[in-house]
Length: 587
Image (cartoon, helix red, strand yellow):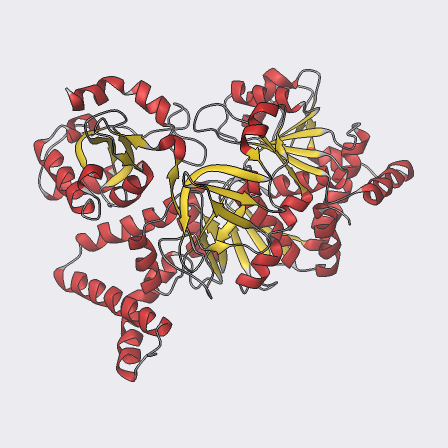
């Protein structure tokens, strides 16, 4: 069987003039058809062979979301080589570690900014620059356009055909270095077959076809967006790229995609922004909003219940939709055939809110080690508070210790150059995920937390910090939250306020402040945050409740090593960096 990239290209030739990719440049949208995608990948594949890239060679791809990312990835896979994606937020040291460990012979930089970061590891390697002028530090960079402009010589063409004939789904496709909440990234080995096995489940669970339009804004360096994008191209749908994730909300309104995968953070931000705006609206508008959301929720419950929707409910919902709910859907770019969440827990409060507007968020669960899908909810089988049932062909069981174990064709063969870690993760034919969870009576999977993140208080209580962070961190006055308390008497938290909302509140209350440091020191602000945390903690057991907290004037950042590229908290880093503040909460 030919590999995944060759399959995408074969289908691209069938889709021909249909639009495959869109990106915005200089204020205008530019389109690439499937025929153009296939032709570009062919020329780029020829260029890689001309550079001496052999089957099995590693090619590091260090670029933001852009059409060239996909073209380069498909070209690398087409010649039987292995893509090694690197987050653009990586430092020069992190990039060097990945390039050296993977043994990459070629490095592809997206823009001059990435080329500057790559200068230290470019020596002795071919460096390709996707767009822009090569910086002085990398004078030998090869422009992608020149690599693709050369004619495909007969000898190169014959070699490409030989590579195609030798291609197999069992070939290694990629080495993805996990972000590593412990700060110790490992290269996950994934084959073409690891990716492909999940697409049949997507076909069964979602109504997604060639007329659909996906928004690509999560990093393609992450397995979640990358696997989904492969599915988009195999289906013949369109993919619109968002280069700057900060612009995603604006792009939603402009592009109006019918499908997208996202981390919970986007839904949390939209939810918080809506409620912040409503909080400052006139009383009548506030009342209308809350009535409409309640009506939408009741309508959706009736739709899914055995009793059905009565004429009175239908009429009330039509009015609520016209006045409020349609506008809320428009914030997300209108109706969706696929709206997914993964990578972190999503609170049922936010699931309920979006469902009331007519948008069903199907939460799923996966790992880099499973390429990534393990389980997902779907329109025909969705249970809030869970991550859905395991996908077809994948087995999930819960160990005696409560750990989620996975077995199936999606599971990695192991970690590159890490035999000890591979043996620890893959035991008796099962992948030990490191996550705690349970299967309910109907086979829906509930994920509780990471084993290594569990807090054990000095009184012996086991506390899952992710659950607390999801519940309490969903408040529109809270931007980031890190729960602490391991081997301590009680649970505490470091809290980064949502400063836009907090500034607006302070101005409304006529509280003067100079900067964020001054603002979080105000007694009124501390009292507000205490009330917000208390109100959000009502579903928690007493031993899980945040007893004390400290407000921080700046966000946790990737640059400071406090969060991963997928926005997960690096607890050890935070515990060490903020030790003095944490100790003060227990003194």
